Amino acid sequence: MLAKLASAGKFQEFKDSLTSNPQLKVKVLRQAEFYADQSTMTTSFITGIGTVIAFMMALGALLGALNTMYNAVASRGREIATLRALGFGAAPVICSVLIESLVLALTGGIIGGVGAYLAFDGYGAATMNFQTFSQIAFAFAVTPQLLLNAIILAATIGLLGGLFPAWRAARLPIAAALREV
Image 1 (spheres, helix red, strand yellow):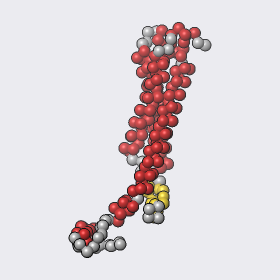
Image 2 (image 1 turned 90 degrees about the vertical axis):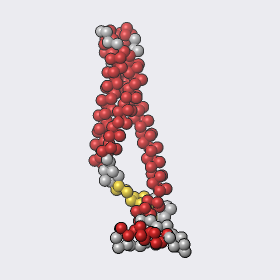
Image 3 (image 1 turned 30 degrees about the vertical axis):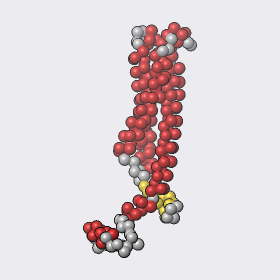
Image 4 (image 1 turned 180 degrees about the vertical axis):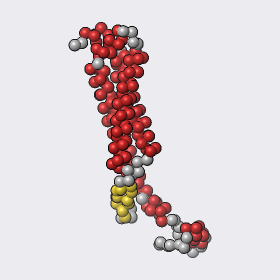
C-alpha cells in the first residue's frame, strides 16, 4: 500500500502508529527504501558482472603493459648495454624502464579517464527487475574519486607491467647486447 503524508516529518509518527498496532503485520518503509530493497538482487548482479569484467580488463592491461615493455627493452638492448658499459648500474636501468612504463600507464589512464567521463557521466540506463517485474533505471556517475582510483590502478598496472622487463634489462649481458646489429 502506498500512503502520501502531509509532510516528510510525519513519517516516524505514521510508522509508529502502524507498527505498534498488534492487529497489523506491516513493514513501513519510505518509497526510496522500498525500491532499494526490491532491487538488491539486480544491483548485486550488475555489480558482480562489472567486477568480473573490470578484473579481466585489468589483467589484459597488465599483459599488454608487459608485452609493450618487453618489446621496448628488446628493441633498446644496444642502448641499455651502452649505458651499462659507461658505468650505469642495474638500479638506474631498472628505474628508467619503470619510469617509462609509469609514464605510459599514466598517459593511458588519464586519456581513458577523460574518455569515460565524457562518454558515461550522467548516462542513463535501465534494466528489468524480474523479482517485481518492474524496470530499474539508473545513471552512471563518473566522480573525481572514481577517476583518481582508476588513475592509481593504471599506475599500479604500469609499474607491475614494467617490473619484469626492467629486471631483464638490468641483467642484459653487456657484451652480447653490444654485438647486436
